[in-house]
Length: 205
Image (spheres, rainbow, N blue to C red):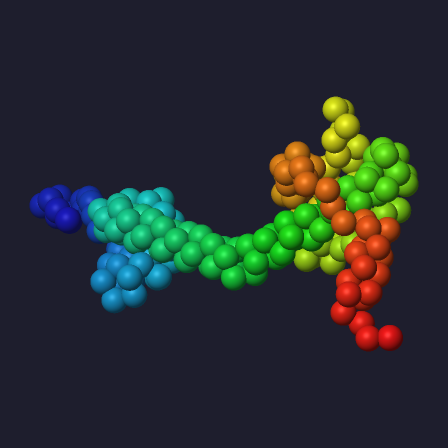
């Protein structure tokens, strides 16, 4: 705005219109388009541009873009998290769960091996001797199992579990009392006696 007095002295006042908030406008547009057309996939980009647009004088569109971009980003985060959880559950039930069930069967077999030793020798093996009995037995994850003597004339067989490391939360452990080894187990000696008696009855010499 300029005024020119009659004494030919001039005084001008210049008014500058604030520059447009380009980042805020782009952030708002991308956030809105991302929420409507891409189910929030583009909203993180719009959120970032809107945030940068807050440092300009004209913040209206930047604030709107920030809100819309935040909502869309939350939708994307929830969706990605749900997909990740579903994939993890599918992997567990299709891969880990069958191996865990197989490992429990293997631990059961190892318990039978140790119990057979007890019935043949009248006592449980010591730690080293017991581990020699089961050293060739591997769980479903390809790792050797471990023999662990317990108090009260009991023992346990431990698998390192999916991570392959002993004494971690995912270990699989079976106590001899859990298996319920109440009935006598056929040892090598009783097996040969039974086989010989059966052969005498059925074989034709």
